[in-house]
Length: 413
Image (cartoon, rainbow, N blue to C red; front, side, top):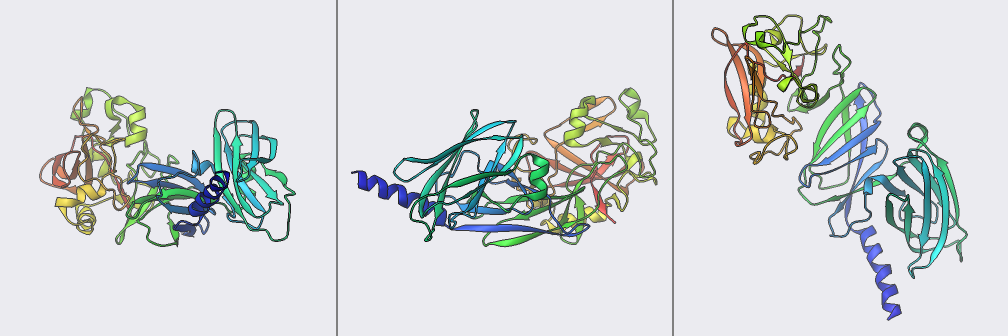
């Protein structure tokens, strides 16, 4: 019986390690040619992880067995190895990590306690003989496991050495080795990738069917308040991937924050936050009246402007037309949108949000509607807007009343 247990232990890890996976690497171009970090969101599964820009994202086709509790916080590279490898572990606080290696018979062949600073630590191993092993990292409040496979023809017995190379986020970022970061993946899953390089943020969408390198084209999109906005290229256009939060025009003049009943009588630019909540402003962006949108001082970052009605039409046509574009451009899931968030796929990374609106002293429909100004005026005191809804995939186009507070997206000049 014991022999069968040993064989099963040997086969299962080998199957997991060699199961089909797609290896995704990252590069940068445009304003910067390097990638600091990448946020990976599986919009289909509702999972996410953060990784360094020079790491490899290993998309493992789902097998129903998970490699560790939190795959993004412990990784091994290379794996399989020739007996020498590096383990990268994230520690949420300063403290001790108890490291142990367990062979296929369940015997602990190596154990050692190391003191690590808060952040990422790189631990180097060498001297491991051919075999399949389980590596355990115990931090007290959490424990990680991962499987390791080695092929080492030079050693007949283990002579394991371990060295803590670097500790702490800052040191790790400047000297880290490349690691493989694992993520469960099913064919057809939609991934949203946000690459960061210094102050630049770029969004890319991916439905992976092969190993490849994703290139982030970094574009400056920073307003006078120092807010850095992620950007996304959709067709021939480059858009902000978040709602505007500027409180100054591009020339540094202040945009008044109006919270009293005077809002409905204004004929000059102003902004507010839904329910006068700064937290809502941080999440959903500010609400602006049309007078701020149309002001010649420009509420967008330098090199950007509030999109025209025609530019919105170009975006919508690229997304398949008014009847389906709402679903394809809305943020998916129910973090911000109310159920059913009809047909929301966020296919292009535009991530439209339901910020609601302000009319006179009344705030309405947060979580249900996201209404965006265009800079194009209509008839009388009305201008063109686009309206996303939680219960429909179609996108509405109509003339909105200029004193109302709605959301803004900017487009690159």
